[in-house]
Image (cartoon, rainbow, N blue to C red; front, side, top):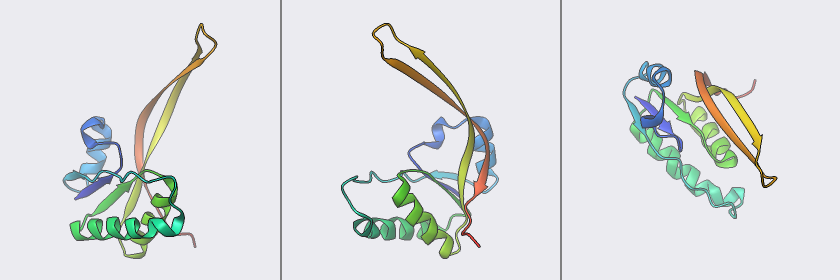
Length: 123
């Protein structure tokens, strides 16, 4: 099973990303939690433990994790420590920015999936 733990439901993925994920088995979504920006790192620990336990109970072959950076860092480290393969989606970003008549700017980004890359703990 390929577990998608992000705020990017697999229903909105393109064919290339779905095909790459399917190499690990069925694609299952687990929405990334809403992380309160007022919590400090110590206060995030219980939520990290909860999500790690949920993920480990699902016994995925690989987990794609993406979301709020401090929570993500702690979750990925915990999963790797526990022997679970964690990957991130690598994309090309095409961005177009234009100046609007009122002086504000509008930016549009299109993300094109290229591959999954393994997270690894440093040597």
